[in-house]
Length: 198
Image (cartoon, rainbow, N blue to C red):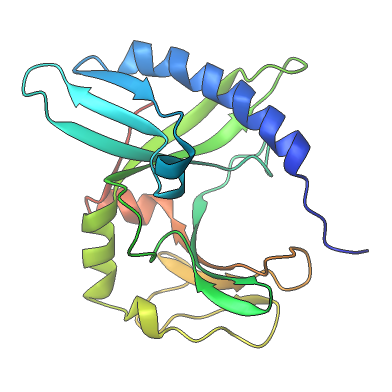
């Protein structure tokens, strides 16, 4: 079986999820107004959403990351991309790409679709990008992590695999062969770099 890109169906799922999330933001983001970003240039910089605080007018940029490959599953982890292949060259993943202007990641997990073409529930975590990178950097040199040779799980020095995180190289099932840092959501919350919004 060849690795495939399921771009078209992903795009449809993304649009449906955006609609569902916009309804949730209206319910749960009481202190903020939000505006979805339609500029491709900004999206490439890691900005899907602009949040503006209603009192201070302070603005934040949010990069939404959704586990759309795992519909109707409740995973305790989230994948942060460290690198990927493009035309045979290793490129920095979105998590350590210094060009990104993201303030927060909006992690969308436990996405349930109980009706056809309609999302019915999910869990949503805000992750402070700078705090997370600073915290991890105090324990691991993210940029010096070598790409493993084999597909699957590898350990990260100074991270406890069962409770904190590990590496996962998708060399057999994805064209881009991403190397992801898989982090436990509980670990992010416990270290005050994330909070669950809904």
